[in-house]
Length: 108
Image (cartoon, rainbow, N blue to C red; front, side, top):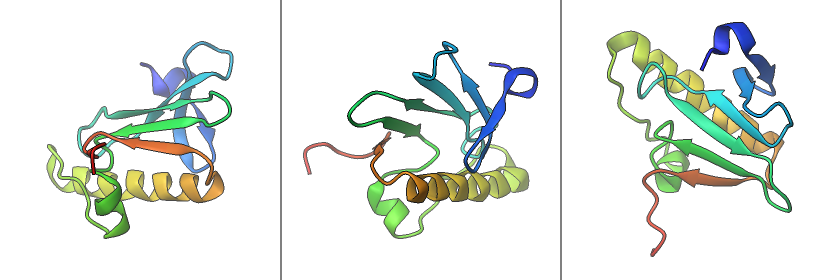
């Protein structure tokens, strides 16, 4: 995905793509865990879904300030904190969005 050429900002996120150009499905650049990590925002009703993948570990980690590890050193750590901060700001702006973390257990 070419965030540099086709991306735009959305809320606190600097690089977002409208995948189908209809406002229904967005790819969100959230580097940190990996350089090219992407989260997805599905604009469905009545509850939009934000799939953050490995940009955040799980709900417990977010609530306790635990950050994901990175595969690219010092810059990766900076990107982890930046992406995490943008995700947290976005969720405060849009509290009705349901978040899907890649490491949350559904049976707890």
